Image 1 (cartoon, rainbow, N blue to C red):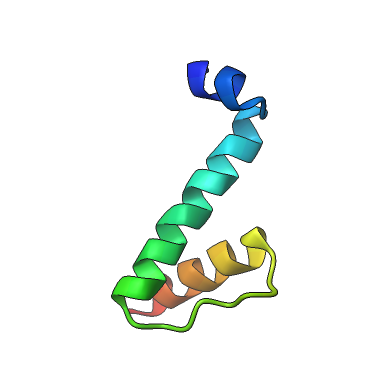
Image 2: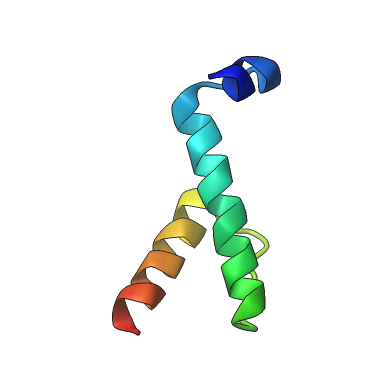
Length: 54
């Protein structure tokens, strides 16, 4: 909660940004292209779909 208060975001928004950051790291480690013009939710779903296949 202290992080949410400090950055001025709700807990759900903070969690989504944290998940997005982890997904970007995973994509870079897997040498996948990182989409530039896609929403955070799309990227998170794409990584979830990829990990469920593997």
